[in-house]
Length: 553
Image (cartoon, rainbow, N blue to C red; front, top):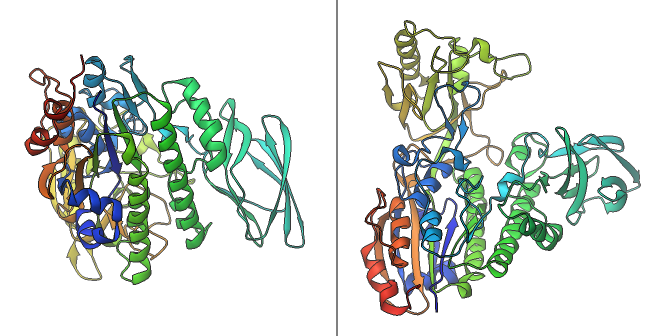
């Protein structure tokens, strides 16, 4: 019998919240009571793509290469950094590479660095449903009675009293559905053009009094998996039945296109997709090790954690209850189940728009349509605490000379240090690192490493924004993670084996320890594998293959 290990990632599951509510989560509480449980310390900054890269590689960001959401490299324009949501930025191999080379079969259902499959190894199925999104084409929108255009195709809407008749394009020609006011459609397979190509897409419609909400569109673009036939099977057996909404539609809520109840519906639809997709992948692929993922706890915490009322917290608890059901649905598929998260959460009351500050001090320029004018922009905040100077001979099309560089850095840092919330006279940034000489690859010339409590940061920039904006409850994010070094730094780890019973045991581990622990559980020699993390010895001693399982030949 071959050992099967399942790593379930619950994005954003907070140790602090888990301690408050674990008795309300029957499956997770059962695993805690008869397994291992504790804090899982994330990396800095504790942002999802950075933390998940450290989870699967066992290495710190400075070693695995995923240092920020946007990764700056010499020779690339400042406007075109590498994305952290891609394998291209990884400098070290993830855990599935070592397992596949040792002859184990691996299924990854969702990970930001899984694709494109640059390893090309046998026995590895690598998927990332988020690659079904296509820039601008996937955006939610509203359509009204009459003729509408979506993805360069005509949709005709007719309303009779409270009933809508909707004619829309599919790959088999025009189709029609009817919806009553207030009714949500089933998943709708549509057809349209994004860029120069035409694709099948899937969405949901919500009929409202004066218009129809078209939910974010996912596409069968064959970019979200390394096995084409399996993408077709997922599309036909999961997506067309349950849709493919991947997150609660925060952007539409924030833009006031939808209300809070509609947002919650999109969270529920995202859960439905991930639950059914995950079970389908576990049942229809051959694996010894698998990674699964659920985003909705993080979705709800971002929106609601800073709202101090019972309603908001109850919705967060509901997210954990759904995560509990998500774990329950997977328990029978593996001998050892490790449930973990990538970070925790912290409350915020106000949002700081760093690129808006850079615009205000005339080092970032916007065009009339709110797009950045890169030909006149001297510095840019790309997230992850990193501000990068648009330097000649480092950035392609750079405009800042090496002589101007140190003066510009000091000018920006001075403005960051002097940024004060006039309402309470509080300084926003508590720790800033500036470089005397230009940074190398994957680094900022200025790095923000500490932010005052109750303030979140964003790279968004628009003409009508203020540098500091109060959170609008139930419309804007009120929970953040990344820079506070407190509750946001600590996720959870739970480990359970159905074959080895232990009394409840507490762990304190780091996110970089998970990958080396998995390799040890599969009895892989790690002598020549460079990882910053260390195997969690208590887990290996209890659950190791030499104790209870036949080793793989």
